[in-house]
Length: 259
Image 1 (cartoon, rainbow, N blue to C red):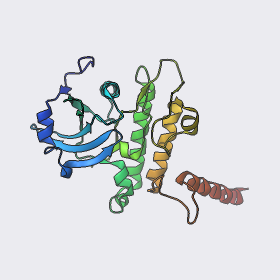
Image 2: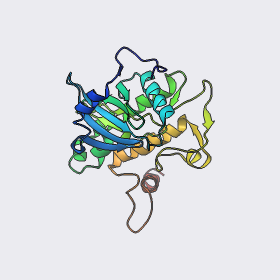
Image 3: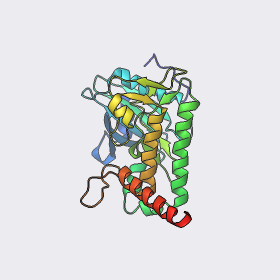
Image 4: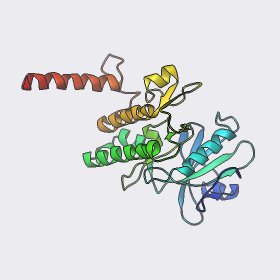
């Protein structure tokens, strides 16, 4: 990891420390499954709570992608992004990174859980949407060169009791060349449903692609519905189709009232 320019707060962590912090990577400490491996919660000897993403040799994310993710996260210093505390390379099948959690929960579980979702009042939802937007704005406009996240979705946003959203998972992030507005990729990677049409079909990536993903997340926050699960009775329409239909109905009502 010597190729990575790291700040003083960043640690090249010992495998044994993370192994003990996660209770030997026990199933009871497993909190999720990322795109490249499972995620575990843990507590360091100093009391800091962490999330650890464990990658194996069978993961499609290799050493180059791992270094890319670490490098990008270290360059992003903003309240609406997770802070990377350290990482560890141990053998060929154990690439780990520890990220602050502060008892945070994925936005995905908060908006879809029947008991937690009602606790999100409109002020909370607005603050979450605003925080994610500010994070994307920072990523696109205040990093040099600009960075595209490429996989923004509720499961990659963490929430704490303070309701401050923190964007995570830079495994697919892409640095843009300074002065360019879009780039052609060899293949589209990300999560279908959150990918813009020009990216999914033509492999053209831009800041607008992240904005499209944000728009889908926004609709999920507003409706409390998942993009992949919600549909009208006896029809295969997606959440986007459903919201579009509601929007058209509202327009028709407004026209009747004001025209």
